[in-house]
Image (tube, rainbow, N blue to C red; front, side, top):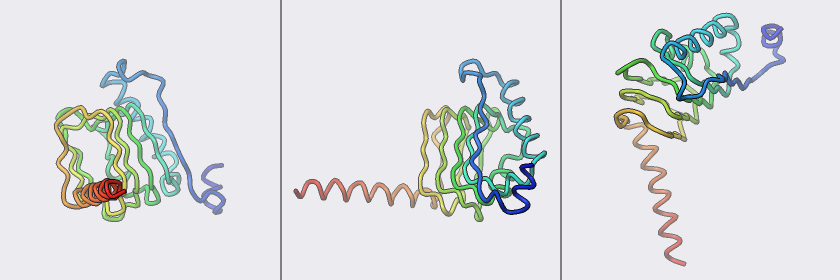
Length: 165
């Protein structure tokens, strides 16, 4: 039924949250891999859903055995908001994001564990929300640095404006 709604053009965009009842402190690597496998099966079973996702929230996943980059940044071509909570890419792994065709505007990471995060290209990214970093500080490349500078300059300008009055 969902495929038909997408096929005939009734469903233009979609918000999806894949929840998990397991508390963060109770999650094991095995559970997180199993949760990721379930999400992968969902996406494989309904590939047309990926083309309509505009907002996606995922919880308690380990992407060590799943091509996260391909699904999130290439298949989900309408995705504008991505939230990951208690997710990782495997022990001591680096998550590199290079997605020149991505439409993601907001990226939220909450209690995520990456050895390193390298944002090489996310051209439309306007906001990065990061809560509870569990590894080394991320290495952000020039594109993300420009975003930070822009917002820092804006904040400084607002402070300076307030000082004038």
